[in-house]
Length: 111
Image: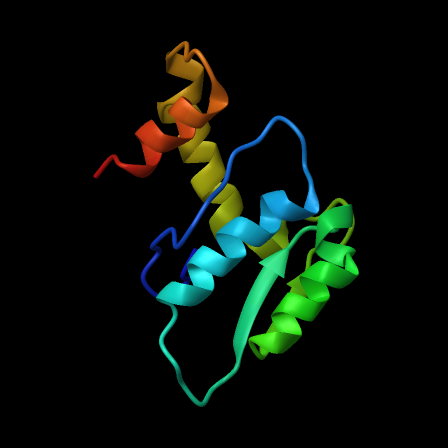
């Protein structure tokens, strides 16, 4: 999520968290970010995939700095937590989808 525009730059849905699961939307988001002279930060939780060498290497290559949530504290990522709450309340809890990819795609395309 771009904190300036509140735009979801990229997302991925999967039944299992993997390194590839997080690298795909990272690449998509980085393609949308224009070249500039100021620092870009990405905020994540403490999941193993965000601590992997492949993830850190990819951030380094693109000159992106990582910010990581403290354990059991969602307040430092309030904007994304709020988005997830709204998404779940408005779509996922009110509909039955055949798979998780359809639920994410349908919400990402809502205006």
